[in-house]
Amino acid sequence: MKENLFAACFSLMKMLPARYILDRAEASGRLKRGGCVAETSSGTFGLALAMLAAVRGSNLTLVSATSLIDVPLRQRLELLGASVHLVDDPNGIGAQGQRLMLLNKFLQDRPETFCPHQYDNPENRWAYGRCAEHICRAVGRVDCLVGCVGSGGSLCGTGEILRQLFPDVTLIAVDTHNSALFGQSPGPRLLRGLGNSIVPLNLQHELIDDVHWVGGLPAFAAARQLYREHALFMGPTSGAAALVAAWHARTHPDDTTLVILPDEGHRYQDTLYSDEWLANLSGWPVAVPDEPEVLGRVHAGGEHEWTYLSWSRRALSSVVNDRGTS
Ligand SMILES: Cc1ncc(COP(=O)(O)O)c(C=O)c1O
Image (cartoon, rainbow, N blue to C red; front, side):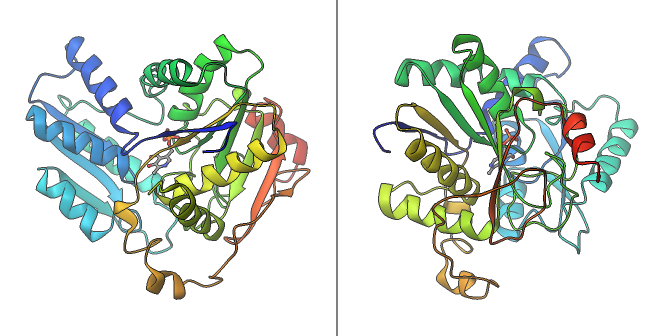
């Protein structure tokens, strides 16, 4: 991208943990070829599972929410043979609790079903060993890794390997406002895929040096800029990550910065790449911001804001107790 900034661009990053987890389940006998699989997903992990299920002849059930899976994605999943159960989510918060309850009920009723449990299964993180290896072969020493956090698998999985190789590597997490991952209260969010209304075990807060909360509007603007300036046609979470990584690379010219870009833009052609859709979005247009607002403590912002907190490898409980408000 720039001299000191590199991107690991995925068409569908979630294919890594989906394949790794299913392969290990098959190898250990927890899942038979052609057996039943069920999972909760906001979209891309479900899509990767559905692609694998179609090829391997498995029977896949996905639990998601009306706010997360749009009609074209649902059609894609169903054409691949997946059964899709959507929990009603009129407030757009993600209905994570209800989704997990429905999934658990489904698993209780069908004990032969294998569930990847992407939020808490460490295999989600382990799947990124290959990614870390590719990064080191392509780039060599990495001083800073920037990645979005939803389950925590990609950033923490890649980051824990890089930290073994380069103990001083800085890990920067990209979250969004109204996400519970780094201590904000969960609420409606424009961005999907990054952010969460629960805190998954795969998010290892003690690995993280800095947290950025990027709202939907700067993320959309940054994704469009990424396409215009670098011809990288990526999704909105990639826009958020690229915004943060470009700022870090600019302000740390001696660091080699690597950013993980999780998916391509095709799924977002009717939203972030549609001028008409954006024109109806409150607050649009926005310019790509030059720098984040620096925070001294966890503080929720709006969809037009980009904020930053030095996290300093602390546990979530110690940060939440420090601020004393939540
Ligand atoms: C588009 C997109 N970006 C980012 C993420 C966050 O990745 P992870 O779950 O590895 O934290 C996800 C997760 O589903 C995603 O779908």
